[in-house]
Length: 228
Length: 228
DNA sequence: TAGATTGTTAATCGATTAACAATC
DNA sequence: TAGATTGTTAATCGATTAACAATC
Image 1 (spheres, helix red, strand yellow):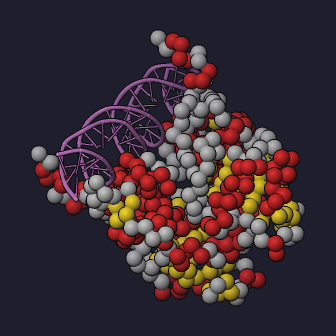
Image 2: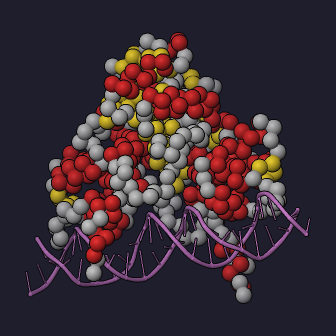
Image 3: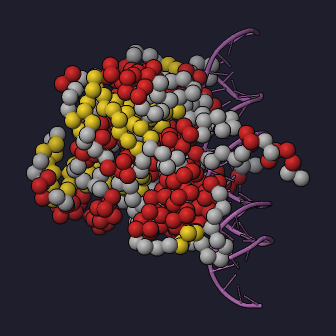
């Protein structure tokens, strides 16, 4: 008897973190198949293209719903729409970037943002000399203008692309302005309140992990094999 | 009776993937404490600074060895040396970057590389117009020169910073040249042989994960809380 | 009906963490 | 000796995957 539990709305199964990341990958690969004119795909084929186990793919998709056809596969257009919906890509999300050095420039010019429903609404730098520069259709503003831009945007995500020394201060300014989700490219652990969501991308750490694996080749006992 | 197992060298416990990533973080934070002139630290304090559970930190460190002092803590200099050693940072690792657009520029100019024992030995681009440009002390070369540079380097890590359309071809060139570890910034799943190690950093995916979390605030049932 | 493939259950595997004996 | 903190065990938790009933 499954009982009460399934009635409680708070118990609705939340999508695991790892699954969310993979759904984004599935979505991108699905779009490639659609561009090629395909209409239906099996979990086996899609999983191969995404570099995952078919069972894992089906399980991941099942968190969003069940809209495949047994004996046939998934309708690619339906799958795309449902995943995009689940990932919140039907509405545009605003993004502000703090720090307009090399990395900030790269992020600001990254076409993938707009392609996936993100809109860059602000570029900020503490360095006077960078103020006024135009990147794409956005002009670099002084960091003091951050609160005004955040207030005008709808729940923007803050991206920190400053040097490590400026990262904590950038985070504080973002939080004070009302930002609750931060993507941190600086190699610093940010000290933030619990309710602020932070993700960290650390280039040097990624290289260190690769470096470690290389050194330990062969020492490994049957590992999971993170293929691409 | 623990027996034979502990004798078999292949059974030597390998360091888990997730642990390797955190060791790199611990190392960076330890270096900050050393700069401040500190000499000893408890797992509790270091764990707080790194945003992890003290038990997890001790467990992670124990994969590398046991060199703390009960009742006292860890000697910071010893801990740094052992972690750096375990992560293979005592010897310099060579790095080549394929694709010198905005992101390639950012990576080439990233000071954190040299600071953590990585040496940029080659910059390559398929676009004629970019050949010859000097970034730092490295000059951009035509992609055809890749094999020669890789052959001269010691097991370099290949970084792909091309647009998505050029990523698979870049990967193939790297592999043909003899590279076995690849860090992929392009938003494409690379099709590579099993023995090639690939890590993927996808900016848009990171934003999508943040975006998803934001949308589902409150729906979550007591989650792990990935603090900073 | 026979063949194929999903959706889901249950088993497995690995990672996190509480707890505590060891020991400084 | 008393207090502190490590190193490690064992329990918990969550994620992966094999397997198969459901069903097109």
